[in-house]
Image 1 (cartoon, rainbow, N blue to C red):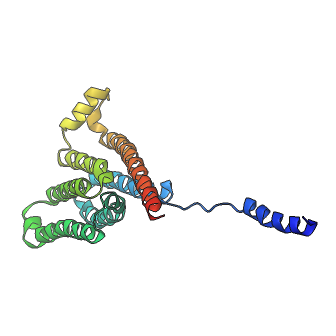
Image 2: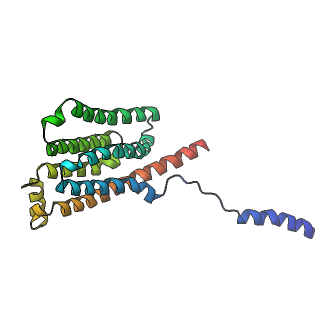
Image 3: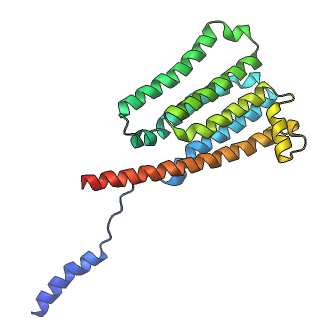
Length: 223
């Protein structure tokens, strides 16, 4: 074999050895996937804090929070829809019907005299409970990642609806040895939010793992 032939045959081999295989990105970065949970929990804590000082004055903020939750639920639930092999059109219909019903109830409350029949504090409590249970139903039917956030919303609604001698605060104070738990509702709510956020993160990790496995399996089937 001549020297020229040896050089020409070695060149492609060297080029192949330097070429690195491209890795397919199957998922978005973890911190990006975690951002919706951060937005939900932080916003809920801030609104809870504001509501403690002025329950009636925070009605519009809680109402504005509903489309934020609905948008996050719509985007976040895609992965669970993919896992269950659900038709995306049917998934969109469920989301629209679910959150459309929530907005419909709010519209009815504002136009059928309910808001005028009760005081602002009671109406705010009803709105928060509506958000809490609507999010719980969304978590059960469409996006399990919202489950612990929905429980936190129920917790906040209960604390705001019964601020004096709250049974939940008394129980937490006795169980965890928190002195003066009744006067530490905000601190306790922050602690509960942190626990809920950590639990939601584990659910997120589990779902991301299942989605990754399914996507890799689908790619292998296609190949």
